[in-house]
Image 1: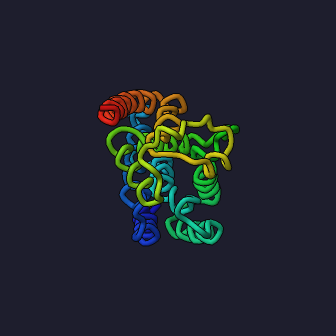
Image 2: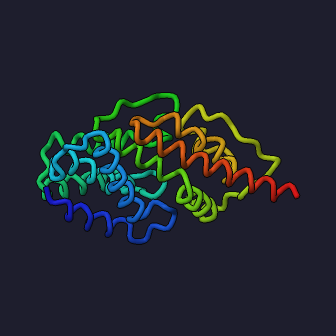
Image 3: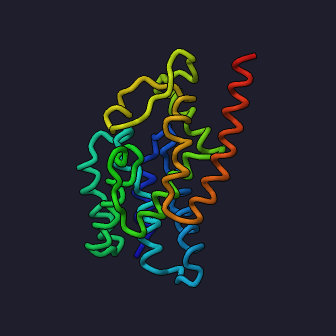
Length: 217
């Protein structure tokens, strides 16, 4: 497998991305997913196909994200071509695309999709990217670019019950912590993911507590 072809494709697709779903996010997800897999499988061959699948999925996952991609069907066809050129098999391509299309938080509100083993590591890594210091930075970057209030005490957090409600309800960035980010720790698939999510979530709680203390001065 030639992962460099995947990397070049993602760099081109996401070169103008400014919402926190850029190439470097994909790169971090790929590296973190690989790290989580090796924690569980310390004797794994570093050149194994499983690791190649994990890395490719991590790099590619946001190229079809509905928040930044207006034509996912077209991009999926392009991804199939790139993965074939990179020597992935048809079954491996199916696994990668299934994970990409079903791993997001919004797709799993009200229905939990069972991902392939490789996809569970990528999903954990992607959710870890929404937590901790980087998660805080990404949340406020996305909110600012979409005109979302930092905080408004008149707008209360909602319990998320569906994909459409999640996408359409009135939110603030601080509410986003309560509605989604603080919930992610409980959705982790892997032991390493759970441990890191707990650490990053504690950091975010301290940040929000300090934010509210300063707001209420």
